[in-house]
Image (tube, rainbow, N blue to C red; front, side):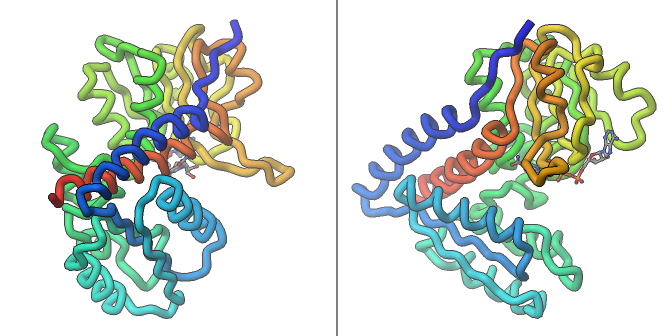
Length: 282
Ligand code: NAD
């Protein structure tokens, strides 16, 4: 079997075109959705991420503000900037790019963002809302994965989904979203005794670890859907995921590539959250 590709670029283009139409409608009513992106320090990967986020705002017709601050910025200064943006009516979403410099408490910084503007979905209020099924912003990467499953018409009810990774930004919210769709969910992590025994039972595998080649063909049930969140570099510096794509695509039913899979959908869902925040502000 050769798996069908879930094309994150194509789905992103479609979704962003729809977002752009909704932005235009809002603008005609006098409101331009605005996203503030704060980057502290000079991490090169973070600089690329924030550039792509700001670019996506432009493409969908949204207003964006990029604030770049030196790593020497104090936590109190950053908290003060967030407070100012919380009360800025032209800003509907606030994103602080992680990781932050070591002298800052990232959780404290995230908690300073108003939950109404928490478009990354990392605030405890957002996490609690997702957990309990209340309205709130969902973290963009797992939300993008859900949209990818939706795009292929995949019925999760009664299926077994195995999420590899238990981070607050990907693994845990991913598991919660799958659970809301009535999948039976297993979360695997660094202390899981026999990962292969788990993944072999999975109808859906979401790999969110950050280890190249972690999921190999012998770990995948024929026909399973494999979503690869991982972002790693191979020995030539080329971007690759956690899944051995060449091998697994011969076994899986559906698979996401890296690059061109979950990555673009993450930014697309950030645009969707910012638009929702703007609409809710009306
Ligand atoms: P993290 O480091 O916070 O979490 C990694 C998780 O993997 C941990 O929960 C750990 O228990 C688990 N793990 C480690 N080794 C394991 C093993 N051998 N077997 C099973 N589980 C193991 O990382 P994160 O922030 O959740 O990100 C995970 C990956 O996803 C990274 O590669 C990151 O770059 C990528 N990522 C991609 C996007 C995107 O837009 N495509 C967004 C966020 C994160």
